[in-house]
Every structure is written in C-alpha cells, then in structure tokens.
Image (cartoon, rainbow, N blue to C red; front, top):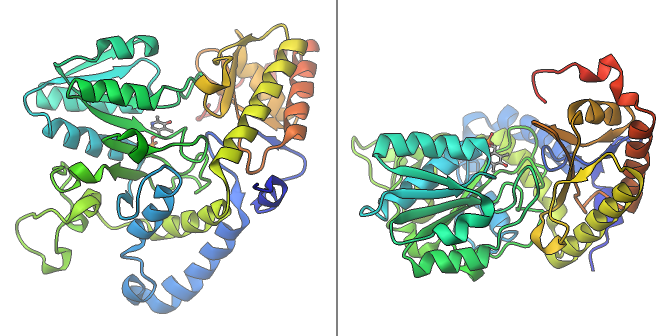
Length: 395
Ligand SMILES: *Cc1c(COP(=O)(O)O)cnc(C)c1O
C-alpha cells in the first residue's frame, strides 16, 4: 500500500495553501528543482554539445516515454515525448486518418478540449474530412462504418466525466473505427490500460497530474500493431530513420521514434524525468481509491454546506476522473475569493468551479479546508467585492 504522506513530502507546497489545481499545473517536485540545477551545471555547462551523447539527451524522449508507458498501461518502446499536446493530437489524428483512407468522418464530443477540436477542424479542412461533434452521451450511438477515427478525451476537463474507454474502443473496433484517446486528465489521475483495452492511439500532457512543470513536453503512444504503418504528417528530421545521415528524402524511423519531430526540450525533459521519480512504487489502484475517497468527501461537504452551488460532475465516482466541479453564476469571482483565502482551484468559463484531487499530495485535511473556506466565502458573500471580479490574461 502506498504511503501518501511520504509522497506529499516530495513536493514543494507552501503550508499556507491548499492546492486543488494539480489538474491544470502540478506542483514542483523537489527532485525536479535539484535535478535541473545539476543538469544545467554538469551537463549543459560542462559537457556542452557532448551532452547529446554523454548525458543521453538524444535518447531521453524514449527513456522518459518508457516511464510514462508504465503509468498508462503501455509497454516499453511504445511512447515518445516531445512538443505540446496540441501537436501530438495533430500527429495522432493525421496518422489515424491515413490508416483509414476510404473513410472521411472524425467523431468527437462536445466535452472535448477546444484545442483538440480546433486541431481536428484544421485537419478536416485540409483533408476534406468531416468533423462530427456530438454530446458525450451520444458518442456510442454515432459510431458507424463511415467513421474513420473516434477522437475523445477520456476525462472531460470541465465536468470530470469519464468515458468508458474499454466499451467505446470495443464498439469502435466492431465498426472498423480507430480510436484516439487524449489522456490529459487521465495520466497520473486514473488507472489507464491502453494495451488492455486495445486502443489505437493515445496522447497526453505531463504538466497536469504528472507534475512535469509549465510547458512540460507531451507524449504520444501508438499501438504496436500500427506503429510500423503509421505515417507521420510532421516529417521532422528527428523522426527520420537516420537523422545524422542528412539524407535529402524522408524515411520514417522504426516504430514510435517516427513521431519525434525536432530537437527535444532537454531541460524540460530533465525536470519531467525527475518528477516521475515520485511515481516509483505508487500503486495506481491505491491512488484511484484515495482519489475517490477525497472526491466523495468533497461532494458531501459542499452539498451539506454550500446550497448556492450545483454539482456539475457525475455523482458516481466510477464515471468521474480525479476532479469535481460545481456551478455558480459568479464562479470566477467565487474562485478568486477562495484563492485569496488560500484554497487554489480554478475557474472554467462560463460558470464552473473546478477542483482537482491529486492523492500524491492532497489529503482529507485539504478537502476539509476547501469545504470550510468555500462555505465561508459563499456564506459571507465575500466574493461580491470588486477586487475578485478583475480578470488576468489567464483565467
Ligand atoms: C490541457 C489540455 C490540452 C492542452 O494542450 P497544450 O498543447 O499542452 O497546450 C489539450 N487537450 C486537452 C484534452 C487538455 O486537457
């Protein structure tokens, strides 16, 4: 059984705050700070260009990918790191479409993250494909023989609603449809079993529940049954079979390596690699059980003490990821007042208060403090103060 008081001590978390926004940006793992400082001096500083070989920078996207693979039910050599999630969505969706040249429909849902849908819109325009976006509950019924790719985010960023990945993947395959799963709110949050469900493509980011830091690189997974046939649409030199031959023409590298594009973000990968140390020995089933305990306690507390709020997440924990959302007409100001009182969650337009629970560093005391503070902010109408209505560049 994982000892979560031990894992909490591995993070830099100011005592004065309760942090429930790890679903947007995970906190700083102490090891990441130290490892990056060391890497800067010993590797970049002293090895200079030699770091590509001596410090293994060149192979880092695969080595770190192998560590992510262990958290999402994938195998070694199947995941590679780099770029941002939006780019990885583009790569995976293009490759999946190319594997179904006779079909032209991309199916997704309205709970998907805007960037995923924007990327799909752009791809649909350039390839003369059709993007169909339906309500999350209607996805299963819309899977048919005209669909090329089912592109879904497993856990809805607004509501926390969790799709049944196994059932939808099975239904897609019965209809000859390939699946692309975005694990942005799943990796490090829920138990994912990509090989077990037989998914086709998966992508995700690492700055949310994996605590890789702002702008940390994304990951892409291709099921080995497609990996040698998947055509990369972004044919960068680092995805070439022999980048240092500097051939004039592109030849894809073997397997997942072809999904590399350009020079990897070595400093960011170093931070992420250290951040992943926190997961050594963590049992995902224990993590999931604790996440459910925290979420259920939060819902019960808020519903008992904050009648002004309406639950905006599935009540059944089996249908929810590791976050709980509530609605309030002035959600932005309520969240600002909450943050001013030391409880950090976030706001999602137009009226959603979002709270992420990360068992690695959140405990019962965080839940109770969040409930107490929310009840105070709403009960005293503190959120009505003008200062809590001002918006910054990022909300
Ligand atoms: C967070 C998130 C993104 C963000 O993409 P970036 O390219 O990393 O900015 C994309 N899709 C989903 C589903 C997300 O949750």
